[in-house]
Each structure stands twice: as structure tokens, then as C-alpha cells.
Amino acid sequence: MTLATNLGTCQDLVTDLWNSNLINHTELKLCNEFLQKEPEISPQALAEYLVAQQILTRFQAEEVLKGNSSELTIWTYVLLDVIGRGGMGTVYKAVSRAEKQYYAIKMLPRRSMANIPKTSRELKAFREFRHPAVVPIVHVGTASERHYLVWPYVPGGQTLAALLQEQTKLSPKEVVHYGLQTAKSLHVCHEQGLFHGLLKPSDLLLDANHRVSILDFGIGFLLTLGRQESMLDTMTNSNQLARALDYTAPESLTDATVRTPMSDQYSLGCIFYHCLTGQPPFPTVSEVKKMIAHQQEEPPAIRDLNPAVPARLATIVERMMRKKPEERFASMEEVVRAQKALLTGSANGTTPRLELAGNGLILKPSPSGNGTVLRPHPSNNGTTPRPANDPAHPEASSESGTNASESLSVSASRRRTVAPAPKPIAPTEAPRPTVPNPSSLLWFGVSSLVVVVGTVVWLVCR
Image 1 (tube, rainbow, N blue to C red):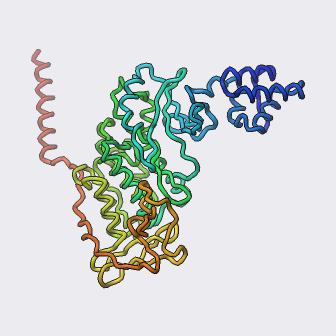
Image 2 (tube, helix red, strand yellow):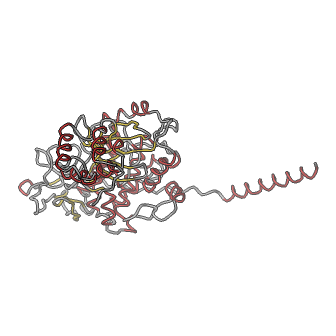
């Protein structure tokens, strides 16, 4: 690939690199030595040399040749590459010159009215929160004409949104495997008074070991700030809300500043729905109709779209998606318990149960008899390699020999019987949308007609 340039000479390029703190003394010396050996070389060739020497990334080389080297440094961070572009702005991979750690930086259009110091203070709880499966915001600031948000960089993996694009939908076993991890992590956050507030499939990152990390933690909080305090301008705010509209709770649609642990539960329920059925709850309607549907309508039944989904799992998801927060599970901890019940089966042995198999899960009928026997999968001898006592991931093994979502499988030598699970959650009647009373409509029409006639008579009499 040939790099284009707006610079005149190689010396201009080297000067820009030095002034922008993109090279150190050793690298400056290397540049000068190379130019002494190749005095007639072009700026493009010098940039290619620096990329080959891993002094610059290709993204940096392209920006420097365009004369944008000063935009590659933001406070103590140096931008290395573009990760993606979304409704809020461009996301970059960056490195901290002070810590030599990698970060993800999201650049936003600057709002002059944004109170950065106050916003930073209010985000303190997010910055101080530590959980291995949650990636919280760590810094906010302003550089030149832009605001920026900073998160720790999570290498590799694939977002749930990307996986859904490839597979359309997931099996019930996968949904429970990923969902239980996510619910556990969110429960820890909620106990600390924190919430995501804008959860969607692109915020769930799956690594090679099928562990889930929650991204963009703290973005939802910015949406709860008043207009005078928000870092997000109206257009950015609208774009961000539109991208998450398929998974937004009714109470947050009524008032965008209302984002709570209960709205996280609704959003997670919508994500489960999408994973199980292959589509969001209201996939084809316009944005306005979608907002109304989230508040007043019921989506197609999960088992109508995918009969392979166990009835108990469908019941859990549908309860998470109730319109009224008080009709959902009381907390994310209850969601965790409900999912765990799926993993052990019912007491009478008639309900299917879920069991780990290698890096995934398999769905098996619960055997009759006293409780549910958990059998290891032959491919991995009943074990799944995980860091010991990893609080972020329920599948992590412990010294006692249990692993994967609270003892889903055990070795053949330690096969055991688990006590019967709690009774399944009884489905309750879904709330119906409010329909105006016909008599009320008639009274309203008559009253309006009387007012119109009276006004006409008054005008004529004048």
C-alpha cells in the first residue's frame, strides 16, 4: 500500500513526529541514521520504513503523512489504531506513555457546556469499581475540540453482536452459558449502586474460552445527566439511543435519564430474546413504533419463533421483559437463581436441564429418580480449564473440584447427585396495553362538539 502525503520533505515528517511525542531519542537517532544512508528517500518511503521497524503503526503513518500528527496524542495517550466507529464517535486503541498500558478511547464532538470536572467526579464510582468481567470507564477529558472517554483495552474476542450476525441465533445452552455470566457480573455492579444503562449485544465481549466481559460500562450513566451537564450533544445522544432501541426498557424510553438496575434486567432479557429467536423483540417497525411497542405491546412468543427453547427458559426471559419494573425479577440475583434452576432441572425429573460439554453446553432430559445426576462430558473428562476462583466467570473451577456455572459437571470419579432444584417460576399473565374505554371516547367527542358549537354561536352573536 502506497502512503499519500501532504508533507514536503522527510525532515518535516521527522520534525512532526518529534514535536508530537510520537518518537523518543533512540527512534529519532534511528531516523537520522536512515536519512543519512538514504538522503534522496521520499517521506512515504521513510514512513514505510518506520512501519516496518514497528516505530509507527500504519494508521499513525497515514495520519502523519496527512499532517495530522498532533491529533495522535491525547493527554498521556498515543492513538495507535481505529477499533471502530459508532453512534457516539470513533473508538481508538491507544497506549499510555506513563503506564505503558493499552486503552480504548472514544472521541466525542465537544460540547462547550459540558462540565468535565463535575462529570469526572460523578464517574468516580465507576473508575474505582473493579471486577474481572466488567470494563468500566476510567477517565474523561477534553482535548482540542473534542471530548474523550477512556476504558481499559480488551484484546481479542468477539462481541455477541458479531456472533449473532454470523449465526443469527444461539442455542438455549449457549444463551444460558453466556447469560448466567452476564447476570452474575451485573448483580455485583448493582450491589455497588452501579448500572450499565445501555446494554446491547455489542457490549458483551466473548473470549476464546467463552467467557463474557461487559464493555462500555459507564456510558449509560452519561445519559442520566441533565442537558447542561452532559458530555453528549443532542445528535450524539440520539444516535446512541437509536442504536440501543431494540433493547431499551420502557421506563427509559419515557424518560432517557431513567436508567436503573431494573432497566439493565429488561435489556438483558431483550438480548436473551434476540439470541433465542434470531431477532429483536420488535425488529421491523419504525423507531417511533418500536418505542411505542416496547411500552405497550408484547413481542411474539419465544417458543412460537423457536420451539426448541425450553418452556422454563422462555418464562424467565419473558418475565425479565415485563413492561412494569415491579413485575420483573426483584433483582439480578433472582435472575441468576432462576437460570441456575435450569442447570439442575426440576424435582420430578420431567423438565430438560442444561449441562456443560467441553467449551459449551448440551441440553439433556433430566433423568427420573432422586434428583439430577451430573455426568462429565467424555471430551474433557468433566473439567473445563479456567483460572481458579475467578469471580468474573461462573465456569471457573475451584479447589473443591466444582466448575462451570455452580458445579455443572464433575469428574467421573466424583459423580454425585444434586438435591432437587426449586420449583419452576410460575408464569404470570403479561400486562396488557392500556386501551381507552369506548364510553370515554364518546364523552370526549360530545364535549368537543359542544365546545366548538358554543364558540361559533358566540362569534355570530358578536
